[in-house]
Image (cartoon, rainbow, N blue to C red; front, side):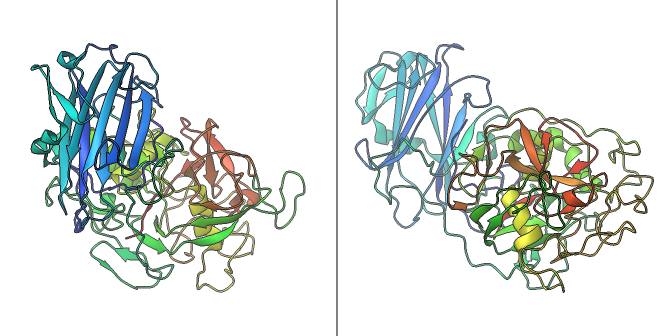
Length: 538
């Protein structure tokens, strides 16, 4: 589906996080149907404040089916109260349509409605059944149909059906889930304050501070492992406002796991890209695929993995994937600008190791190396399970190039993550294609963290190139890059290829530059490509 979620909690139901201490005021609506398959071809969902004539909060319609942009039943969506102290009731209407297009109350096959109120600090669940027995029952817009009884009653009666939201209410893997207020171009009659807004991002520590899940400590640029998610220690109904309760790495439950650590970035405004394109005018400062630059790009505060995801961290996920996959894929992948990426292709096990691939079916010598041979969907799946998501390419470039750091020579706007000095063939800065720059442990890559960090971040150039969340689109091309100013941009449509950043052990010096861009098909599992995860700031 193509909804855009403003607020998204990543303390999964059934995969809840330690430190989930800010329960949010929310109602999770799950829509089900007992119609025969194919009888309903689309759904239209409308949410208003107070009643059917109140401020419009959500108005969306989508075809039902198995496509990536289509909804499937059961469908779930979350409504988050912007102000838990002002618990205005909300009116919800769900229409089942006979055709794969929007319908209204007059031509809908079936309609169901509810008027419900939030409870401060609680996440509640509400079931709405599009019942075949309600087909043809003409209720008013303030009434709901009672299944089997074929009669109407006040929609406020739905309030008695609210229950604490539990793990058992999570939609199955193939269910669409959109959460928070959805920003819809079609909404024209809602006042400016009608949206169920996500909470403001709080003040964060200075760039480069490392985050521990239990406490935000100013500990310089030495990454430390953070507390892992543990479903057994926390109520399975715990959910939090504004993303993860703390930037956790679930894959680092064992403190000896290589490649752990999260670095907090304060965000900022910068020019994405480079003035000179290497393909047309090679120079000491050119970049690949990065011209013309995109001015006035702003990224919000976020946390970034200190290291590329290691084989050991990925193994921690793969060992429990069968049990956790339904919760991981229960909702689209939410991004700071409100975009939600619907899940597509199923994940695949990484390519098993040769000299080029680091994965093995059991723990071996390369556990501290970056995982490679992983396609884009599998990388996203790991990041969501681990408490984050793939970074946008704007976030990635900000971290590598535009973030202020304390290391000498690493000025803002630097050419490489460490500064403007090129890496040498003696392997002094990064594992790249230099003649005297070999891998470790019989691999093409080196162990993560083999080279000096910049601002607490390692290997942003070389070793493996890194997947981002963006579909590759040339700069300056609308709708992704055409605006004069962009905040938390994400190019989530159009191209069949994914933007890759950072250069690999097979790439020359120009692709190691922090503005350079390469691309890879989302289903390609390349030995030269890995990833790291981004996370919401606390």
